[in-house]
Image: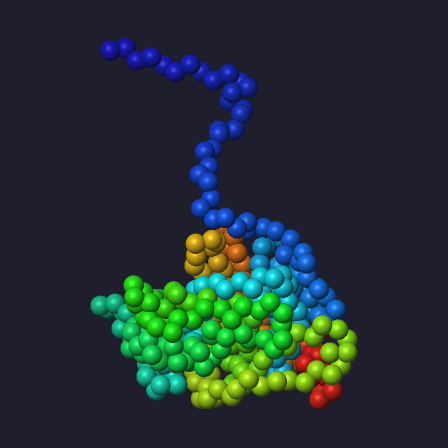
Length: 342
């Protein structure tokens, strides 16, 4: 049978780009938006806010910056999202699982857990690379009662702030969800909902090695001038934190948060989280830095569809630190009169 050649394309047809059929996005939250709409600025450290807004750029999300040695919220970009949304923590819940297992004496930083037939892993690598099998293993060993105890002890399921209007307490179940294994709770954060403020309070307690402050958000110059830290409770994690720090540093050195790193002399310690809930794809990064004896906590939550992930959120946080470093923010003196006002 003689084949019939297809008709040659005309010049105009050849130069016309091919039409690409795009499937509709499964997410109902946009990836890009003006995240500053509705924010109040009177109590903010404006230098920190400018650094955070610049780093967030066009992303639809929130950036919360906290002084971990006082609990003062220095800046909160997208205040509605930071306070009222209770989102699945994704892999940031692995910080809670790590602290719980270390506090129980179940592991130390060198303990290797088997995650497959031929592979085992220690805590440092598991945190840095966010290994789900490792933390699912921990969760099953801990059991729901201990996971619940430590989760609530570290501030989940309760408001992180002191008199911060409209703040959500998040979600933490009193009973084990019937169809969700404990390992899914400790590796993906299933059945748990947190706010950026709650993650900032938790990371602050890790940064300062055990003090869980009420986060306070001054609303005017007078409240800044008369600011006084408020301790919620002291956590017995001083021995656990040094065993977690190598993994949190490893995240920005060779793990999931490499986009955060900008200067080896200004280390950043952190944990990424990437997952989806019914509404949106989520990208988390909870972090603190350590420069010239000073520490700052930066938490980023990104929402939307394509392009949203924990690694991307880590890049936003890294840019916050970099912006402030370039402005010599960390060179500012710290005295008793400037507590809560870095």
